[in-house]
Image (cartoon, rainbow, N blue to C red; front, side, top):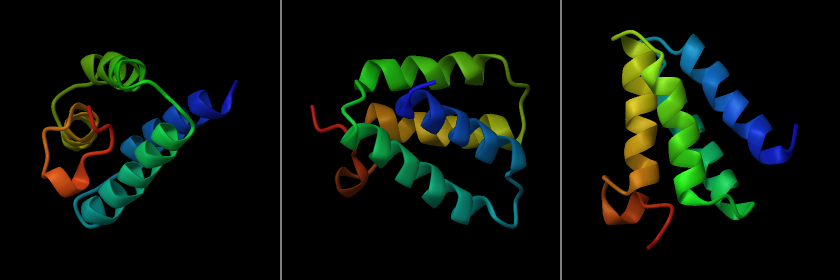
Length: 87
């Protein structure tokens, strides 16, 4: 497993352990992992598709919402200051 795959797995682990009390903290951690992926040279589309495939297998709930929020960061559906991939 390469560094990029390991980071995606870390995001999935975070998503599986997130709860309402630590949601904001875990979103920040997930965001930081997305920045690491970007800095490693991961393609936006590749990251998006990996997370989308995981998201598609989830039932509605907090994990589903967590991954949806991270997908927004990848897609750039967030404030300009939070955009990771600037394209």
